[in-house]
Image 1: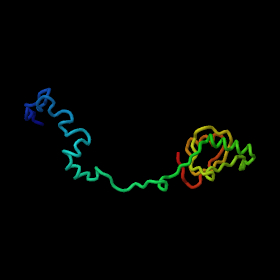
Image 2: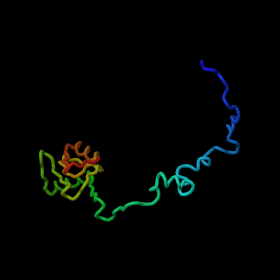
Image 3: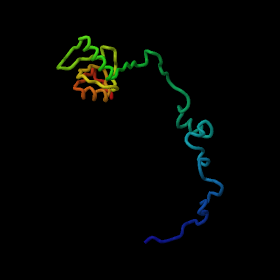
Image 4: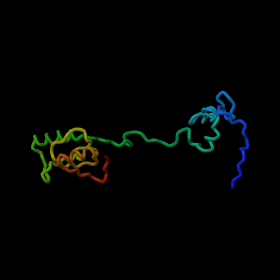
Length: 153
């Protein structure tokens, strides 16, 4: 059986300060050296040098310029609907399985987005198609053919 005994110390356990004096001692952020990354250039500098030597400054080279920025030429579903109507007016329609073939990749577009409405069943040939655009094309009775395996949504 465990022997019951009193605690080692009864002192310094007042209900207000618990032994840390008065007027805010051992409270808030001042006792911890600041909040977050405070003091990384001052009193925590040796800690930064030891544990995170690359914290400050820059490293490496980020290439800029047109040859390094990918070109995203996008077209919306509503614009494809206008293109189909123009093709119907000019009688330049190519049909496959009862669907109008629209090759936006050969027109220079890299991605099809879902803004607008499409009324015609189209067979859309594209590099990338958003999820919303694909839903709208399928709802109109069309299909989507992706060139390559890139699919984004």
